[in-house]
Image (cartoon, rainbow, N blue to C red; front, side):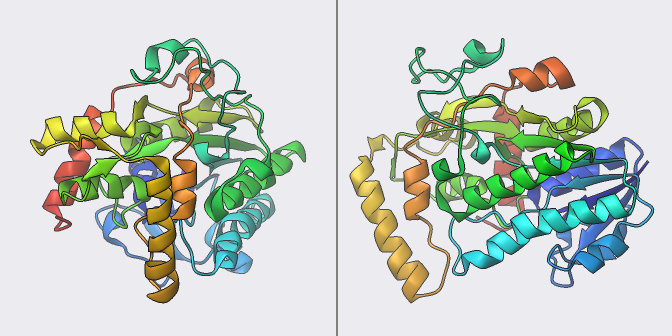
Amino acid sequence: MKAFVTGATGFLGSHVARALAAEGAELRLLVRASSDLRNIADLNAERALGDLRDPGSIEKAMSDCEVVFHVAADYRLWVRDPREMYRSNVEGTRALLGAARKQGVRRVVYTSSVATMGFGRNGHAGGHSAGRHLAGSYLADRRLTDEDSPVALTQMIGHYKRSKFMAEQVAIEAARAGQDVVIVNPTTPIGERDVKPTPTGRIVLDFLKRKFPAYVETGLNLVDATECARGHIQALEKGKSGERYILGGENLTLKEILDRLAAITGLKSPKVKLPYVFALATGVVDEMVTGRLLGREPRATIDAVRMGRKMMFVSSGKAERELGWRVIPVDGALRRSVEWFRGNGYV
């Protein structure tokens, strides 16, 4: 099998590329002239120069490939020019799917995000796994989000979520038109090779740098990046065209994540809970000063604080039933993340 992979130089994409290599796939990886190649330096893979914003380069790079894994995305919670994010995430996805049709690609696995799901009290009950993965501090009468939870573009907070929602709609429309496209919705991957790092990786990194004097009441679903990559292959083999599959792990509050990091590292977990109004004020100041005045990406953003008001807890029941997905503890992935950041000069 010859597989074309976008985003392989990034965090999750590098795991997908390695999972495919372990299955014996022949790889062609899309890279840009400016790409950091550290994550694929040791991979036996062909590299194709191209850019998602250049449809011609994508079509050429994809020639003779049987399947496509579109993992690349502009994943930032703050961006000076939002138009760049939409060009990459929305129009880039449209261009890639068009190129796949022209090249006769058998199947496309599109990596969306759990961010496109509907969160809140109105979500449907999850699959059979829902009750097992409730975080201890989360009220049992609240429902876990799944693929059937109602959602609309107006619920998307920030340009990243909006752009991913719009890109997912492009993929769904392509499937409705007859193209073979399966959509996976990873939750919050954690593990090694988070080179940027991602916003989730920053939680680990900030903890290691002792930059967590307090925490806010929020919740995430963490998934082992290695397992998430295997889930992409399961989607290729067993997924239904046009369907979405949440690839999730454990539902944990931020405090529970920090407590686990404390157990792994021996560092202290914060005990002070920051009220929402103070977190929002921090986001406003950091975004204005660091972002607007200094032109750097702020550590705290208004959108990130607003997103944090929702417990992003999910059920992966559909993926378990249809793909053979397994929900596993994330302690090993957290430990690998800590070791990788420490071993690569981030701390």
